[in-house]
Length: 344
Ligand code: G6P
View 1 (cartoon, rainbow, N blue to C red):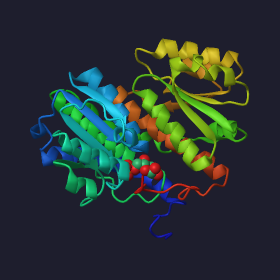
View 2 (cartoon, protein in one colour):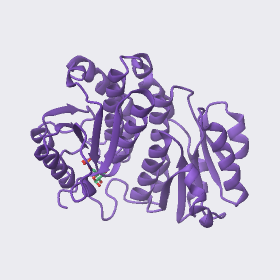
View 3 (cartoon, rainbow, N blue to C red):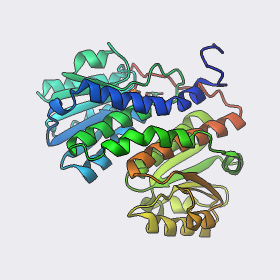
View 4 (cartoon, rainbow, N blue to C red):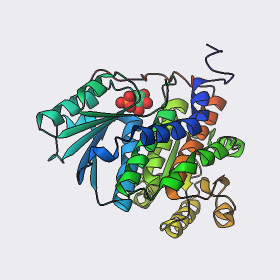
């Protein structure tokens, strides 16, 4: 077992460190495969998924609506089965394992309604790849840790590759160097942020736009492996309820990267601080403005927001990992959870 962990203390950490390679390999495979442009992605797409894969689909929705003319809707596979919305032209099922029961049922339902179907999966020969009309593989390699990390990055690589095709190759350069930015955040020191979280039993993650699903995924990682009750929120929604919970005992992780919502994020952070909440702020390197208003500042390299969605996600994985480690949790096999949920 130790040999398989390649010198890392846990599979999760090893898998976090594999992400630059996963992103690079998945992008390369999409290029050499060359099938993506042939897929003729229709104007209206529904994506179905569960868990972390659902969060990757939400990132896709934000990117597609910002950079392409496609209309993307995202559904929990478990809801889709019973409350099927009017279907779009293509249904995409995203599933690391290719075996999640609800996602498999969703794809069967889409086929019965004569939609074209595309599977995005990590496992060659998995049930979903045999069931869908088309399959695109993420090149993440076997993921052992129950909490998904590198498969999320693999899914984002596939989705970002699709957005690039739909945008006529506009992002080829941006995506070509993304693995280097991911590499740069891996050694990030987390000590101060972890200390701030150790006494907490509940916390929030907030972001806007593409960083909203990134916040949801950060909170899911924290819940899964540290057992701290972490909620992800679109930052503007915090005022509609959760503000009542803010106190010095409820830390907030706020994603404050540059872009059109930078200013409003900064005022949100000040409002949270005014209610006593300790804030861990994630911003770009050298952003003294964010650094000056938060309790702990974690930098990511300044880059295109697609790349920042990747680097911030990796930072949040590391934060969950280091916190769970300090709390002496069973990181690779959290209580009550399964790697793949094959029953409804
Ligand atoms: C389980 C795993 C999660 C995963 C989800 C969906 O809950 O613990 O990490 O995101 O299933 O799995 P899938 O294989 O369909 O991506």
